[in-house]
Image (cartoon, rainbow, N blue to C red; front, side, top):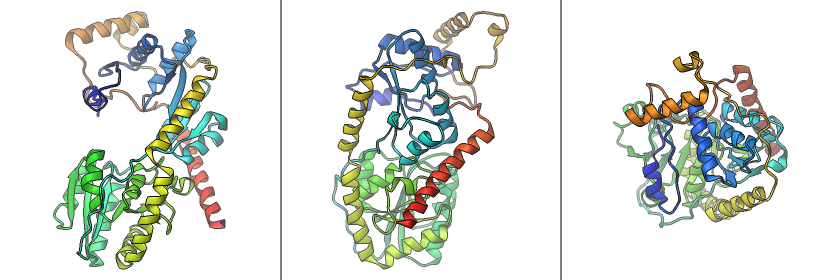
Length: 404
């Protein structure tokens, strides 16, 4: 998967953009390309979006005297991503976390000062279309998300469908999304008349053609930094039935039996029972729908999120810029190529490769990536420590909920 600047400019025609083609570049080449862009634009704040090598590029600009602050949007709890934030902590001016758990772990495990980390939930649009009522007995269920098993556990949908069929519960299931498990999911479910696949939908299509036509949204994830589809569903009066993913109790985006229903991760029997409750008790469904929509409107509207972001960025822009603190060299150095082995200076090597790209065009080797999301040099023990820190923070939140 690669960035699509043409599509981006189509959706945001009023933004001034600079295109950086990372295809076929080495890690050092990508860092240098980003550094050239930053020096040319000279922004007050650099805000990389899942672009780990931008951290080193900003550090190099800072080392050269450029006054650019580095703000990170910590969009997930993947251990290597959090490990990168700890490594670059001394360079980072501020971190914005959509999830409370991420903020908690960065302050407790990674050692960030609380003043340097903000919790700003993602925003969702308010309801745009009226819900479509139906007179049938079936419960209309939906799923929206990436077809990934590692974090989204999307294949849990297969035993759930089988269980609902065994219960003889009348239902329909609309599935929106795409991803690596697409073929497996379709092969297992597309022959069932209750199941329909919608493909990848835009937000406008979700609000117009998807959410108004379902009663329940299911989520199976093992971990979520926030869970934007849950906020969108509640905005549209859809009742979430979600796994108690790592971050569920800390965030309280969905509160069990108050704004939605929940089940332990991987416990499909419990998930089926919660869905059955909603089918047998229309009054429960109505109450959760109303409370969920009110909760989302009060806490997760786009205007609230954008105001919080604006306040945060203005605050960062008015503070002194941190130094590079020596984090200028590549954390995951490239294996030496022929020119490197001949002793050609790195700058000359990069210039030669850029000239070659102009002649033969960019390319990505088989299995290669365009812009890596994170560095991959961390040990298994270090990554396991991060997973433990996330689980400990979530368990503490669950204990607090039980005590309350």
